[in-house]
Length: 494
Image (cartoon, rainbow, N blue to C red):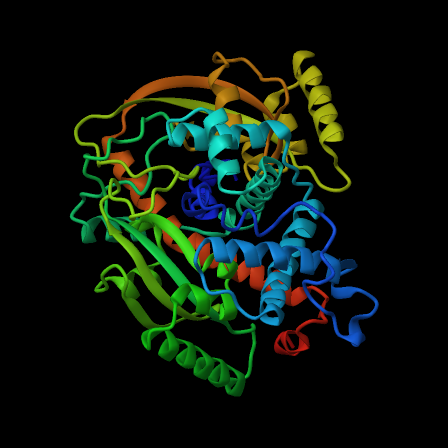
């Protein structure tokens, strides 16, 4: 559904990790481009003489691929001064990450989600702009950290694809009611600060005051969906043991790298830095009384048991001791007061989604044919009802009045270029291909609507990440996975 795309929102949780790794090269170097494995790095046992580390549905992950990434992860952890797990443990962690990435890749392919070179270039430009440097300087900083530029771009492409996958599969499942917005505004005294700034606004200067930001790391002990009570208790005891270790002085990042089931394990469990409102309620509650460097107790969610460490807390302008490049994540901005005159657009569209069967070329061709039919006098509303694959099809594709930032950039840019009555050429977004018609425009004071929109966004931010983790858990539970380096993980899924 086009009215709930939250285009800028997903880059915050997905790419926030870039803020901590663009200079250090963490995570990116841990997932290198394919290259020959070094035989001396790991000695596979005889039972793996076929060279297969895991099978994910019909896809094979080889031991050579695992060993290559494990070596790179080993070097990267050393560069970050994170204690390196034993090689057998490291290989298991690397393989778990590779399995998750393969599942995501397969699902994106099934849905016809593809990332163009232009989208990757746009992501690079956005990161450079956030850091107020040129793309050439950004490349120099990346390569200075030891990460090949090609590797960085490959992994950035993966993150953009994941962002698109999340938008396609999860966004529409989250509903925020008006009553919830009313209750939230009442709890905030009707004075809230947005969790992120609009794309058109410049990044605030360091001395500006904004909403509090919070940086977290986690150790996750995942609980398989439908696990029996005895298994849940066993995993809780494991989490308690890990908590005792880190509270006893063990390096948190090292324990995360060796034992966390979270996707950020090989980056020391770092989840990133974002406005407090952008974290799930559970994490906010668990860390609200903690200072930087302190560790929470065990936090139970639908995904398992979390141990959280506060990395930083303060104003957006405050930074950790080590300099960091900013990611694509939008920056927090001060709340705006007084009238907000905004130009809104009333538009409608026809959406053709891409899949394995419906390629980009076929979708574009179909819309060109529909556009010709519109030029020949057929009605937009009628064609939208018959052919659009969006939830707005029964309403003739009517999206209502759209506020800047409410739709994804590709859609908004094309829409803004149209005069009332005009119909666009086919436009591609992460949701598929669109024909857009602008019906009318108006300028309106959006002060009250802005507060409600920001409240809705904050509540959405709190729910969307846990929802996506649940979706990933379900995806994993439905897949055929044969992990030959860690057979226990196969049993845990059943």
